[in-house]
Amino acid sequence: MSEQKVPVYFAGLRARKPKESKIKKIEALFASAGFAEIVRKDALAAVKLHFGERGNDTFINPVFVRTVVDLLKAAGGKPFLTDSNTLYNGSRHNAVDHLTTALEHGFAYATVGAPLIIADGLNGESFSSVPIHKNHFREVKIADAVTGAHCMMVLSHFKGHEMAGFGGAIKNLAMGCSPSQGKCEQHSSGFSITRERCIACGMCMAHCPQSAISWDKREGKRAASIDKDKCVGCGECLTVCEPKAVTIDWGSELRPLIERIAEYAYGAIAEKKGRVGFINFLMNITPDCDCVAWSDSPLVPDIGILASRDPVALDAACCSLVNQQTGLANSHLKCHHAPGEDKFKGAWKHTVGEWLLTYAEAIGLGNPAYELISI
Image 1 (cartoon, rainbow, N blue to C red):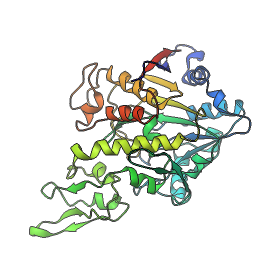
Image 2 (cartoon, helix red, strand yellow):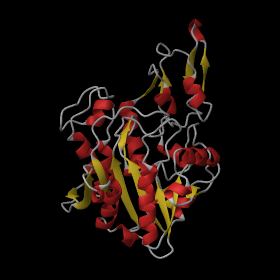
Image 3 (cartoon, one colour):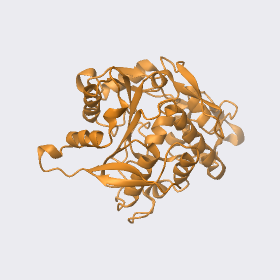
Image 4 (cartoon, helix red, strand yellow):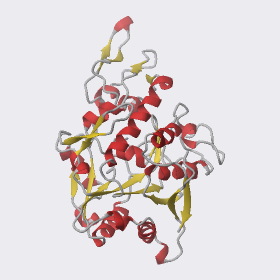
């Protein structure tokens, strides 16, 4: 690990006067991190964020997004909000549904002050190949609105994730900047269904984007079954299966998945050296991605807002701050409630999220060694 530490700027959430509002803190973080430097006059400035699946309510507040938009305009840029369509079937699977969901969640021009552009087009067909020459990929597929932007601000709701361990700036880049084909390349195909646990509810079938799940009526019992030749590994069946009949070989599948995520994140910003800024929101730190159609209770109390020019340092700082907290009762935490214990492993025991930071450093995405600077 490099001995040089990357500055990560932190603003807590306590406020007793107007100049301590969250909006003022976002403005101070933007200035401290020097984000105005990434914008040149009339630059097309992508604001990469997650609009939230319909039914989810813990996505980033549009009022906070408006603050970043105003700051980019003041720096001379032309900002637009963007995200790519989902691989799984849901309320963001194509651009029409995606934009409708974003508007329902408050991301209208009247609120955010910028247009919305779905990054990979109507059905995920608009993307470019970016050469990266890494271990898993020689090139990666990145949505055209991302590659076409002159600069980018990446706004991430930091939270847990059943497969990746945690979702922050790196995962926002990797999955959020890639079209369906890119998401397929990142995911695993190691899913199967345990017949004894299946209750034949059909939820996995309803959410499978590839129609890879069908009924198996062997032995007088109806149970779901996955066709591995059709499965693209999006993991949506794993998320929606209430009895947890869907399984994956955690020991062999997770590290390669995480490595592919890191390489895609590298590709998302490979052509924008020095022109990307990152802000993570440590609020509503739920166990699941905002892709799910619900929002569970948070794992730990709200912590603050962080900003950096390095996504690896930023995510590393966020992980550390989360783990320093006392885990909340009535949450998805099964263990690791004490300060210093890994909260994401407490929620999802099989995850190896720490490997994401290690591998991201190894491929040159960033440096996990950080200096936390309170503003």
